[in-house]
Length: 273
Image 1: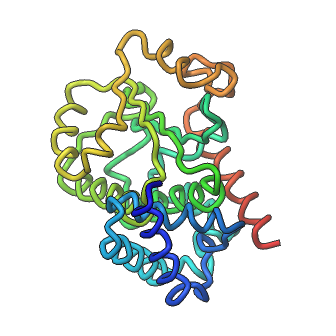
Image 2: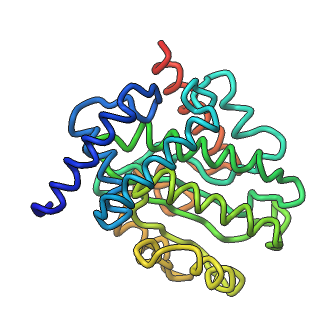
């Protein structure tokens, strides 16, 4: 950081200590002073170190957390996690992989073929999305780990019915992107897309209106034929699932989501112990 950025960090720290330090929240359970700085820097980076905008963003984020009742632990309750992620209407399609990239950073893994728009309940789905983002930020993205990557498989699967994207699902997608960028800022590294066909490129044109240039530059469209070889440039074989050319566990339909739920419950139990 340059001197001006360091000054902005000191300013937002003073503001945080005065206004939010006594607020009890899993995200604010800092493990060190560096961990606290890492949290505050997310807002500064998201707003190009403009101090007033960064403070406003942080205030909005923490007020939102209070309003959706994260502080008492709804998203960290071991008895509620399975229903939130796997219950009716959730239509979860991405979770923590339990593995890391070549830089040692955790990554998310998703399969859009698992989404059934006809069965999706918007609020239930967004709660599941929020839980995945929450657990990534609280349990994985602690200093010195600043971001995670994301492998998203866009290919269809004959075992699951194809979906069309309607206006309702677009609204849900937009809100999910909003939550990720505004309430869990600067937590995403590269996004690797597998099987991006013409339908996704049409959707991408719409999505590009919602996201920043900084975020768009993180997206990597993998080659239709050589995507497995390309992934091995970023991930070791033992840190990739079989389906993606690795020697790790197979996706197994939705089994990879069930494995992630077990990890989420385990982390939450350890936190409450």
